[in-house]
Length: 275
Image (cartoon, rainbow, N blue to C red; front, side, top):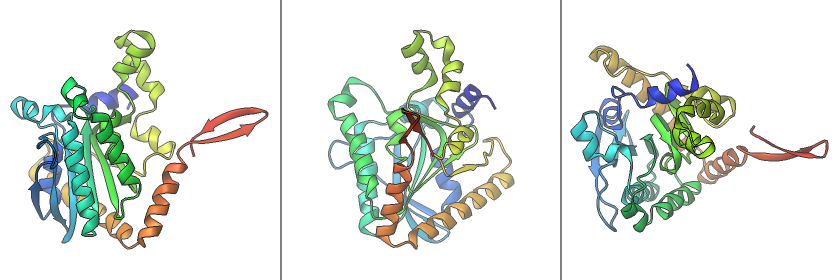
């Protein structure tokens, strides 16, 4: 699949959204609301669930499927209160030693004036800061779009997985093309340069696994089997992480992100390499 094809696939209207993964994978789920500061952001679903009997905190960025639902969910573009709600639930999970599962599908955080007035950048920065030393395992899965800081805010995890036909990038191809060339028609060219597909990112060591993708129009039996398999894989990974001593967990998370970019000198020149 070409790079831009992966971007278009991630935006497909028939993709499974976060709520469908939550309903399909979990034994039970109780949604919690509000950031205890401003309000409740409908673009972010969060709460406590059970996965194969294991209690865990689940946070999902929700786009919705139908037009009315997408408008209600703000098309998956979260406001600051959405990220503050997510962080509140993460800290709650830490307090009660529950692992955290994040399901990411967003073109980016909402960039409206009201979001900036309420501290959008600070909310994302606080999420990254707290996740770096959160004393409980975090597994994040990009199930659709993984755009900009809106996705990164929930992707600072012990394990980062991506579904096939998704992307993860600091900027959308269209925005990148507009910034570099003032021409959004060159989005496919920008996508190729950004190295944003699961295959690219796995090769660079930035993600840990590429998951199979199930079409949203699949038969119920096939969908149920897929969700059961995915739940089992997530459970196994989270169980492994949960068995690690907390200090080792945090140290390995630190080293994971320290390895992402390193500067080495060769023949008198500096090179940035990803390993």
